[in-house]
Length: 217
Image (cartoon, rainbow, N blue to C red; front, top):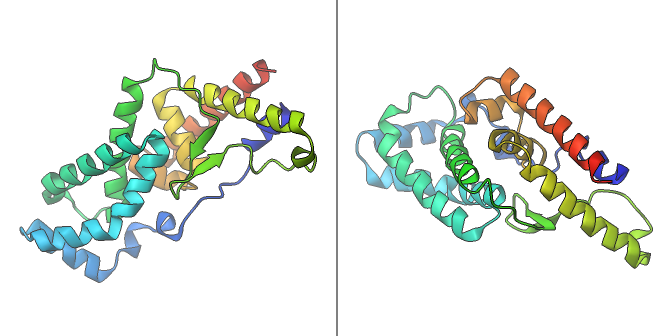
């Protein structure tokens, strides 16, 4: 079980340059597109969608673990963005704004299905592929020891079960930080809260996960 617990202290490995942008990184051309879209240009809005649609779909796929749910959230997110673009005040980057919409939609979905327990040995990574949650745990014996490989799969299920015991917001913050590689400041912006609140939520989530995993030994 020490292997499972060690994952919780690992640095994020799935961060992308886009995720690490800030509101000051928005290009002049994107600002122009936003202003044109606010003025009623559908062509400008379509260009914004093309810039962000794949990143939005990957995020939704990772957070929901379901291709169908991700597709639905992808469409709903951009529909909400189109209807609400007039309220965009350039106080954050466009990607943070659209990601905030996506995370809120995913939170709503997670709350609706909170009572349902899904046993999955894998998660969806930032590229949309399956990710063994223990793939980064170093163990030279795994490939030569079928029993060890089975143990790894059991631990993956235990981690999934432990994640399901978190509140939707705790799980969201934990996954955005450790599986998407986002900074706490960005997570706070996405969830319309402060960096400090996001940090405290992450602390509670990690503490609960450690306790749940230790109890699963």
